[in-house]
Image (cartoon, rainbow, N blue to C red):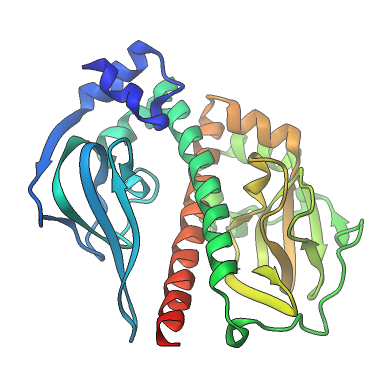
Length: 324
């Protein structure tokens, strides 16, 4: 039975014993052809590992009806966002032929995470890398489906990028009570908060500053403390806007895969940013400490939020293409 998980790249890094921990919490499922596995808007309670079958993923968009997003089959994972944020399903899953496999509840996986089990860390790192790759593919699809009506010129007040982001400031001056309002910091102990702040660089960045350009090399990610950051894809003659990120959000983690930025990001409102350098990012991303556990959660939640925004953007672009 343990060999079942070997078919899924998500668990490729796990030992036999670690796969056994996952299997002990999983239960089998079988869905007949035509069965709706879950609907958009349902609470996300876990993920499905498809051993055999075919599942259609679609989403409803305002005033645009239902749009097919993907088709999943044997070896694919369905609904893994439930292991990250447990929010509402962002799409509907329909079995287009009889499908069977294993179901892992988010509640059970959270037990492994809270106990800092290696199986949970290895799985979350795989999820992070797959989310980054999926985001890159979505960016390409958005780029391919862009239309002149969806492209905006770069605002005249945008400038850079430059070697200096803005004005540096000591993180010791940050108001801890204000930081505690942001989800990223809320679960940290006092010791973890001070460890994290001591490792990060602080920047006050003015409106209009480009943080990084699409295609450039990257070795840092950023945590937004104040302000708003525009995420966009560069196109000939302009930019395809994808999302606006605010306080508590991470950006720039795409350097995990390949070291190249997949988007352009610029400051829409004067911002305070914390820069996470490559050394500390690697320590927390590859570690198994309590702060690493919380760091993983923050990264994946922000990647999922970006993916949801990109999915919506792609759906609208696809609908525009059908109207042509």
